[in-house]
Amino acid sequence: MTDFVQTALSNGIGMITLDRPKALNSLSLDMVRAITQSLLAWRNDDSVRAVLIRSSSERAFCAGGDIRFFYEAGHSTPQAGSALLEDFFTEEYALNHLIHTYSKPYIALMDGIVMGGGMGIAQGGESNRMRIVTERTKMAMPEVNIGLFPDVGGSYFLSRCPDQIGTYLGVTGEVIGAADALLAGLADVFIPSTALNALFDMLASSRATDLRAAVLEFGAQFRAEADPEASLLAAQRGKIARHFAAESVHAIAALLANDDDAFAQKTLAVMQKRSPLMMCVTLEQLRRGAALGVADCLRMERTMVRRSFENGEVLEGIRSVVIDKDNAPKWQPASLDEVDAAMVERFFAPAWPAHAHPLRELD
Image (cartoon, rainbow, N blue to C red; front, side, top):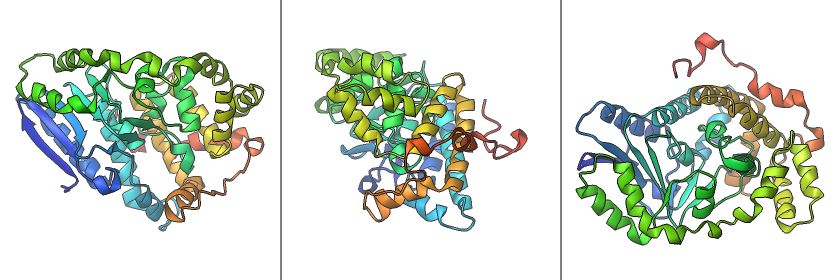
């Protein structure tokens, strides 16, 4: 369906290779459809024991969705976006759900940049997943930097990180490495890039009935290289837990402002660059997501993304970062003090009757 997704079957492992290196494997609708088609075909194929998804490039696993496409479609008529934009988010979130509920081991090699939509195709599942990080991993849910919220199931997997680390990542959009990803519960095993060929050789010959366990066993030899002490967030864990448990972004910012620690001041400075409205929307999203299952989280996010393009904050964010590249977004409202509860609540107001929701059939 697309030249940007290559598939193969080897030793009972379905291989999906993202191959759009010039765009850091940013997901297009055709790529979403190609991945979905392969996963559906392999789901009931007894010759397929597991799935491995990876990149053809060491620079990025997947940097997210194709936000330039979002901008162009969002400026079409009607303002809320074209049919293709609607299709993209509906089908991307359906793919995220498919991965979360996949019945076979699903191994994601998060080597290089893994952000936004890349997290959506890596974080799925629980009992059947295996998320590999390397020393090149640069992980983030940076949507607040473009006036959006951490979607693709972020309301599910971020809200389940320990000690408010997911709240910190969602509200600030900050980038973390391998050790922090392990600390946050957003990765399962560290394997250095120099050992990846050996990993592939092992998978190509392994007859193990539990390939997840085989990958963990392979990664055990590198455990010392993934020492938790290498985590930059480990020392800040208690501070993050205290500050980001506050009931509002305004309260979080006030706590940070009253903390003269360098980490607190750096975090506050980062937040002052983000969309005030979307930080508040994100906090509400994660608080709600903590009590919801995967399907309901994705349905909520599908409503939120419709409201986001109606609101237009995301279009201004993309303009500043990708189109004009002035990095000077004109956020509306411009400050946290101007954000009220009604503004936030609009993002969660139903956009369709329940029986007509695009993701109504997810379970």
